[in-house]
Image 1 (cartoon, rainbow, N blue to C red):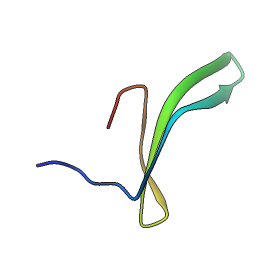
Image 2 (image 1 turned 135 degrees about the vertical axis):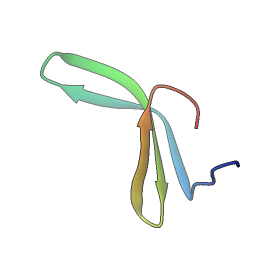
Image 3 (image 1 turned 90 degrees about the horizontal axis):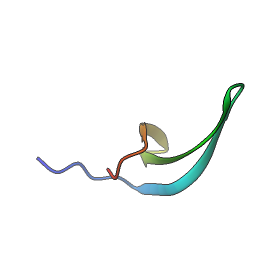
Length: 40
């Protein structure tokens, strides 16, 4: 089954105390449903 999202933010900058990372954030119904470094 293919997941669908309302919005996908590609290459967002995720900042933590150890450093920064480029990630993708996927939203559905105004909620974050996936965070990761892979394409959804």
